[in-house]
Image (cartoon, rainbow, N blue to C red; front, side, top):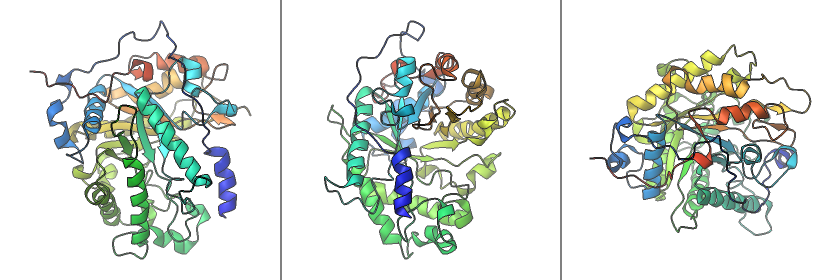
Length: 415
């Protein structure tokens, strides 16, 4: 099973090394000055930001990131992509695919703890998983040094055999017991703690060229409202899910002294109301970012589900405002392949932009999923949708790295 899985992962997730890009290309149609959010938009002062965070003792750069993402959300959203610096359409490595097209890297880099915490990662130089860990680390540092934001998901393998994370590849017994087994007191709870220790060790090892700890946004148990992952809602009660979330945060923060993390709650798109969204919410003391993953509602190229997708993001945006959190569209995209995938001529500049902005939504960031060798969510020059994606990047609220302020510098309180 694992040998088959690795063959798939090698195609879809393998990370390759590349050198740093040249200086950013100038585009006369982009903003010449980075956006600045008025502090009056935010309901708390910069000096008060840490009191609204999961970790009030977080590093200064992590506090700055929290405040600046919140402040930016009132006028802009940062555009990111999973594995943007290491996964490329048609394996055309080098600069990010987004930079190939627009002249700018994305403002946010998505990564995964999957290989880092794999059972077969023995931390030896000749070990394939450890080599992937080192490549992920180098890309995280590179992104931070460029001024990008780093966010990590975690495709954690089930704890019985440590091979898969999709329930379609698990036995009935594994599906029904995997999540419960890692709860405090469960048979695999110590195993789960060991995985968190690895996450903590990696996070604490991240240092930028400025000598500071690199902040990362961590979104465990993503898309938990669905049933295709073993941490999905079908396999635990809401109270069990909340218990494990709180344990995860407390163990990383209090026992393992991780001080450079923001924590993100990101279901898929099954909800339509605040009540449904909050069914498994562990509490404001355990969440910094509220988000949503949504592929299904953006897939219809006639735009028929755009209003529905926008309404779900409106729920997220409203909750973030009420609770002094950051709102985000944590995963989305429409996969285009050379085999003739239909793509609306205005998918990015109209359909997706409406999802992100209608009803005065305020988002700190949105993230496209990664480009693969045979398909893409972000087009490259000459690919279908390239011109429309350029129009999307020039929209009023859209910002890439070239247009970002320093998100790691906490502004002074306005008096």
